[in-house]
Image (cartoon, rainbow, N blue to C red):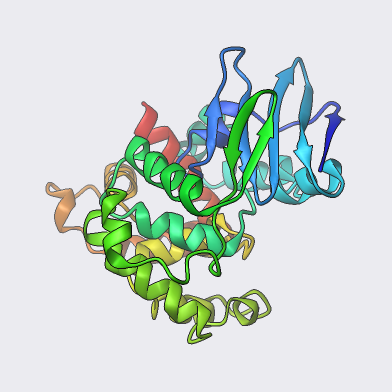
Amino acid sequence: MKEQKYILKNQESFELKDIFECGQCFRWNEQEDGSYTGVIKNAIINVKKETENIIFTGKCEGDIKSIVENYFDLNANYEDIKQKLSNIDEYLKKSIEYGKGIRILKQDLWETIISFIISANNNIPRIKGIIERLSKKYGNEIEWNRKKYYTFPTKEQLKDVSVEEYRKMGLGFRDIRLYETTKMILNKEVDLEKLQNNPKTQEVRNELLKLSGVGPKVADCILLFSDLKRYDVFPIDVWVRRVMNDLYIKEDDETKVSKTKIEKIAEDKFGSLKGLAQQYLFYWRREM
């Protein structure tokens, strides 16, 4: 591993807070200078923005340019995506103006599955703490700039971890779910490689739903935020239900609005970009 640096010049649609604080990732932390440092597989990367330039520095195997181009999906044309979505209605236009720098990350599928199982009925500081403890105990240590970082443990590194050991890390009811899902993936009851090679989103979603602790919302988050990169899903949580009801449905009691109704409106209005529309609306509604 070696220290590397890459400067991306004049990059549009790239704001650190929008990317790292919009609820899609849990291993990035803001630094005193406003930059963010995180772990991408076996790489430790710091991301800093100066005027219109994005500066990536870190310690990694392979080429840092290739790593960040893939992870941040830098070849995706977000200006074009935002233009298409902004033309749908004023609500979406306003949410995009608020979260104009969001980019959907292409996170490792295995890590995304485990992270979003941990996220169920949980808050972000607690999710981040559990993932950090899990990585420190079972991942690999990497030292950079006199600090120690830990890679997310592979499924092989978790193969002998017991339910009791998970429980000691504060996983609560999720302990058995992590244990069972790890076994299912190790045994290829759900084959991650096949999922990545299957272009049919609904088939992949059905496979993910077989995993312990993966319900519809978690499955959709995995599809959207991992390197599966499926924009044609619409994760629904309390914030999304609220914003969809406030803007489009207008029921007196938002808790009684069915997911089916929300999904139909999302499909009719946003089509194949509904996953991105969801993220702009979610971020806008949660932060306002």
